[in-house]
Length: 212
Ligand SMILES: C[S@@+](CC[C@H](N)C(=O)[O-])C[C@H]1O[C@@H](n2cnc3c(N)ncnc32)[C@H](O)[C@@H]1O
Image 1 (cartoon, rainbow, N blue to C red):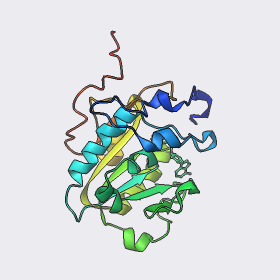
Image 2 (cartoon, rainbow, N blue to C red; image 1 turned 180 degrees about the vertical axis):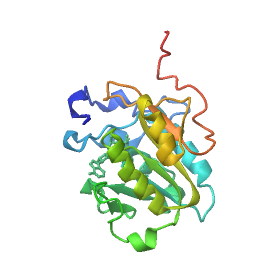
Image 3 (cartoon, rainbow, N blue to C red; image 1 turned 60 degrees about the vertical axis):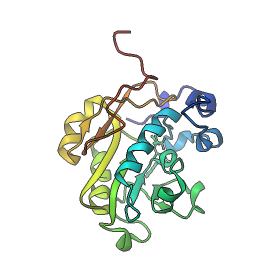
C-alpha cells in the first residue's frame, strides 16, 4: 500500500526538530528537510531518530565498523561526525548526491548501485524503512541487506505490526518495545531488530499506551 494518501501535516515542529532544551538536541535534518510526497518520505521524530542513532552508534562503535542506511536518510544525517564518515546513505532522492556517503539506490534493482562490488559484504549493520509496506518490497530490501552485510550483521527496520511474521522469516527480526513516532503517518509502526537492542527496549514516551 502506498503511504501517500495518509500524509497529514509536515511542520518541522511536529517532529520535535528543536529538541527539548535538555537531553534531546535540535535536529538539523528535520528542521531543514521537507518530506517529498511523491517519494513517500515520512521522517521519524527527533526522539525516535535519537534512539536509533544510539543503537547504531553502539553496534558500530569500532573505528572499522560501517552502517548502510537504506531509505533512512534522517538517521544517516543525524549521526555523529565520525560514525557518519564511515556510513552510507542509500536512497532514490538525489537531493543528497553531493554528500560523501550518498549512493543512488532504487529498491526495484536491489543489487545494482554504484560501487556495488566494493560495498558487497562490508557492512556491520543496515537500517531499513521502505517507502511501501508490502512483502514484495521487503523481499527486495532483504536482498540488498544480505548483499551488503558481513555474515551475522545487524538489521534494524520499521514497518507495521502485521508484518512481524515475514520480518522474522526474511530477516530474523523481532519487534521491539520502543515504538517509532512518524508524525506524518497516521498509523503506528514498530521497530524490528535481529540483535539485542540497547535503546529500543523501553517505551517511547511520545506514543501513548493503547489503554491510555
Ligand atoms: C517512508 S520513507 C523512510 C524515511 C525514514 N523514516 C527517515 O526518517 O529517514 C521512504 C524513503 O524511501 C525513499 N525512496 C522512495 N522511493 C524509493 C526507491 N524506489 N528506492 C529506494 N528508496 C526510495 C524515500 O526518498 C524515503 O527516504
